[in-house]
Length: 206
Image (cartoon, rainbow, N blue to C red; front, side, top):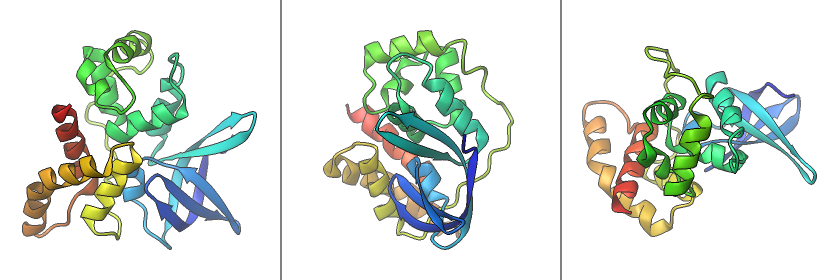
């Protein structure tokens, strides 16, 4: 098993990073939040999970070991493959998923593209005793925004999660005041937080 990859970031896409390891470019599938913390040319270290299929070997990458563990636990539920597990982590942090499962929060799970009401109910039952309690007070590394303009980066992340371009544009517009407020306060647009806020607006619009 490949536990992690470390090296310069050679290429970035909305849900894919290429990490140069010993002269070889390793293609790693990542959530938009993880991608937002990477920068071209800079050294990155991603925890990884290798998914083996008859016709493919796919490497999934995560900001830390906790995300990787939750990714693998999610797949123990029937009907959850690596793509859906990654989509769930693209919408919710590991602790948010633990909270949703422990409190029976169907709506939070239904915010993930591809999960309906029945699917959410089934997941709550199957994952109840697997994810454990939220890691209250645990320190998680902050994710820095990437070099791309935040609006383009956010729209690309939403499209990468399966939303239509029009939906992505509307969600970006909805969170623009939040981003402008952060910039006006002397900071930068916090893409991971904006992504979660945009997903909430899209979920409410359904």
